Amino acid sequence: GTAPAAAGRAAGRGDDGAGARADAAGGPRERGGCAELPPGAEPEAAGAAGGAEIKESASQTRDVLKQHFNDLKGTLAKLLDERLVTLLQEVDTIEQETIKPLDDCQKLIEHGVNTAEDLVQEGELAIRGGIGEQNEKLWSFTKKASHIQLDSLPEVPLLVDVPCLSAQLDDSILNIVKDHIFKHGTVASRPPVQIEELIEKPGGIIVRWCKVDDDFTAQDYRLQFRKCTSNHFEDVYVGSETEFIVLHIDPNVDYQFRVCARGDGRQEWSPWSVPQIGHSTLVPHEWTAGFEGYSLSSRRNIALRNDAESSGVLYSSAPTYFCGQTLTFRVETVGQPDRRDSIGVCAEKQNGYDSLQRDQAVCISTNGAVFVNGKEMTNQLPAVTSGSTVTFDVEAVTLGSTNNNEGGNFKLRVTISSNNREVVFDWLLDQSCGSLYFGCSFFYPGWKVLVF
Image (cartoon, rainbow, N blue to C red; front, top):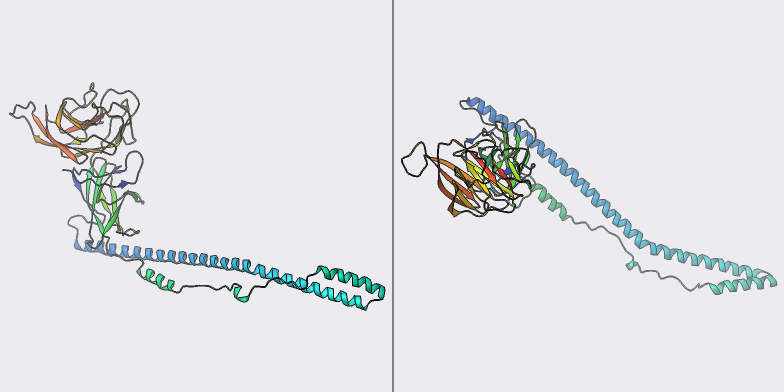
């Protein structure tokens, strides 16, 4: 059956599509965790493993707390020093700007007083001199005195108008900082979210997680993964959904997955969940390479209809789709639609056809029309647009020959879903078919399709 579409954004990893919404769940289920023990393990071993996990996580938590608060102290000291420098610069600026007029006034007064003293001394010397010399000195004195305004002084500001600097410091900041510090940081005995299920897909793994803390309200989730041989986790999804399909998964290779959450209205992330190990045994779906008219990504799971001439169907490289699984096509970009376009599955490759709208095939056209063995159904799905996801679920209904007159001896129940709508019908084949090919055909360039 299909699972609810998980809307969200994936951290991009090239043109192959690192992840996708988990629109459908199908295939065998895989569970695992790096802390799990094999069945039949001794209780003592389980207790030892649990004790080791507690001690290791406690040691890591102590190191994280010490490092964080040391960094915080250094940052706070730096911020306080920067603020002190700013305030001292303000003091220097105000002092220089306000004292300069007073200094200029004082210099002007001192200059006037010195000039007056010099003139008085010159007058006294003129009086004491002889008659001829006295007249000459008195004339010089009178001339200088007439050019000096001894009764004019610059205006001196009142003392109340002179700036008086002071520091305004609000001691309440200590209480505010104290309250924030005492509330800063928490120690959780277990993460609020854990991985619930890992489901293998061809070339991918669906990861599902759930809350385990009823008092925690999650706003966003963050999923990371890595190969078990790697030391570095990388983000693959951030969003509000609780499931996601991780692509770029190599078959029969173990991967670790972990998830954390961000509380409602908060910025920091919760502790990571216990890492879970999963792998996919299913062969990745690939388009056939070298087909004229289509360009493929490096992993061959994305096909782009290019500008070259093409008069045929691009098939999968092998019949890798098995009944009971869910086959998903995600349309990344669109071109000009044509009623002959097709996306679907078929019992075998047949050259010479320009579309999957033929016998022994089921498909959907880009206009939403559904074709079964070349005949258009009455029911129709929404037109395919950029970002559309089309899924095929096929189950065997009748095995071997039948006595009905429907013209086929092998019946499959097919469900095609697109844009929250689906059609269900029986597909009659001439012979039993354990696995199916998939294919697509577009008459105009610009269409890009990811398959998984």
